[in-house]
Length: 214
Image (cartoon, rainbow, N blue to C red; front, top):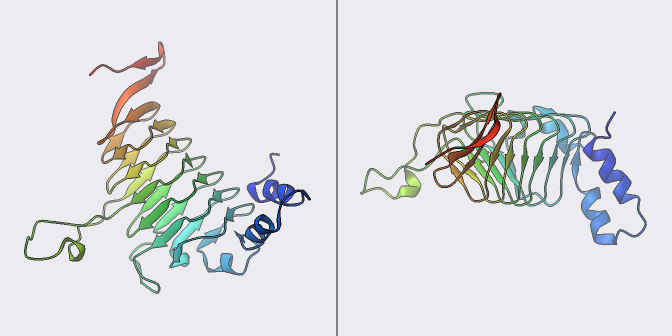
């Protein structure tokens, strides 16, 4: 059986060439055996949240599967403020064998479902709620739109800087190109790029991977 993320990092940490700062960072990571992990709704065996983490709010509404690694400087929250009561549980679910890149942000209010084996590049942002702007007499920061569930299908890859917005539904085995913005439905087995993201390649059972015309 393949070693879990935590086991592989521990093997790396045992290398005597690793400097003191890196050792301290590993020691401060959240793992399934950490006291902090007990605050989560679920925290799977072999998973790790790297240190330092920027924001961790309302962990009991966050479920993390097994052998998942969440990189350093990641913001991960259910709701906007500590102690907020959420309407659903889990609000954020991250499956097994996932990798969330450095500096990313996952902010859920209703439902963000990241299925198994999803990997992301650095600085990816995923949210199920956005700000409104219709009332010009009220600052945009004080206007919000209704939450819309977000799903990212199993085995997908989100490139560096991808933004996933409310209502996005990304299928299985999908590549989303760097700096793309996903606002709607992306079907299974395809490549999507742009803002808003559009499909440029898809898999056909007979022809294999084919380009999609404009």
